Length: 215
Image (cartoon, rainbow, N blue to C red; front, top):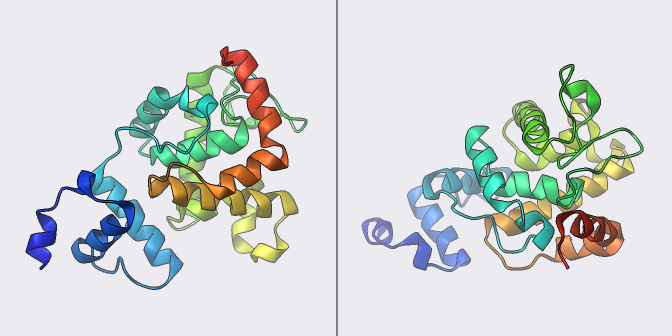
């Protein structure tokens, strides 16, 4: 049975069938714990590879799809994770800054940059954002979902219970983890992304559209 499953083309399988193949080919993939399931999906994405970010992201983020794939390869990250962070942080608005001083596509704080670097330059911003995200993944013991909480709230949140996190970080973790998992399943829509848009994300995307020339 395993040999037969191994001969199947992953591209021809629907998401649920792909998960069955993961369970057959990658030991521990069907463990009932969320951590093991998440880890299995991460390992599968490494075997299978990505040639496009998931179709569920907004058109403003999809505008950066080729760059996201290139950055993901350069900095050894899952492109759907980078796309999820960009979605929540800026919706593809490369020039935006927050009241706290975070800058650009990945809303990177100024202290992450070297002197003379242009914070909002997409390449520079991606390099600094990806570097911090990779650090967060290490601090989160490989959990991309907890790494997003670290990215938003700093590494200190990882040593605290979720209920003790700032409310913004709790929302970020809830939206980010669900959007990311929908993206890894290659879904065409995400209820969590819709929630984020309805909670104020749409205004951010409208601002990004004006900068990107999207009508």
